[in-house]
Amino acid sequence: MEPITILMNEHRVIEQVLGCLDKMAAQAAATRTLDTAAAHKAIVFFRSFADKCHHGKEEAKLFPFVESLGFPRDGGPTGVMMTEHEEGRSCVRRMAEAVKAVEEGRQSGVSIFVEAARAYIALLTTHIRKEDSCLFPMAEQNMTADDEQALLAEFERAETEEMNVGDHEQLLSLADALAEQFGVAKAETCGRGAHVAACGHRA
Ligand SMILES: [Fe+2]
Ligand SMILES: [Fe+2]
Image 1: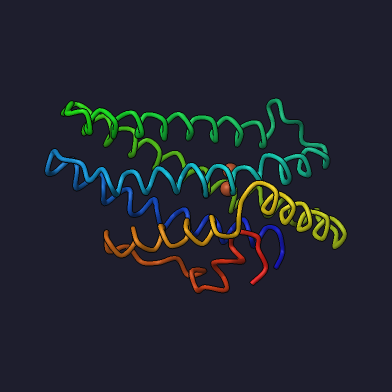
Image 2: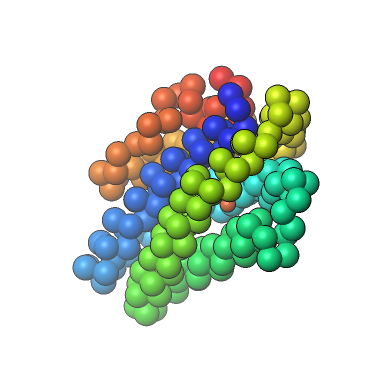
């Protein structure tokens, strides 16, 4: 599998859980209560899969490659993407604080969660669209077969050094459990083999 395909497959799984978060936020806004167990699951997924695994590979492996093509980080596309990753982390932090507030009996946490979740969905949806339609194709067009192999090896190393295979299986199960709970379609890459490949591990 090509490195860009791996990252795009991960986008599809992230979108699946964003769909769940959207339903979770709508439910919270309508009922003025929050399903904190589901919210915890989504936060674990976004922190571990979307940020540590996916954004980690982009920031440490893909973006330096793009910058090596002559696109500077400052004022360039990777700088914008890095800033958006940071904004996403801030949204997830706000969601986690809101869940804690709800658990401590503070009703205001529900509306804070809804606001932070909707900001995160809007941010990440646009971010993924920019990467899928601009940054990734541009990187792919400039990638030699050797570059691809080198990036794949780097992805594999990042996965095995920073994540356990069991962690991935758990995160993907979490994504599917949330999809089932909220009636969201599972990503097309969610067959078991593709699931594994989506995280960079070989099936
Ligand atoms: Fe990104
Ligand atoms: Fe991405």
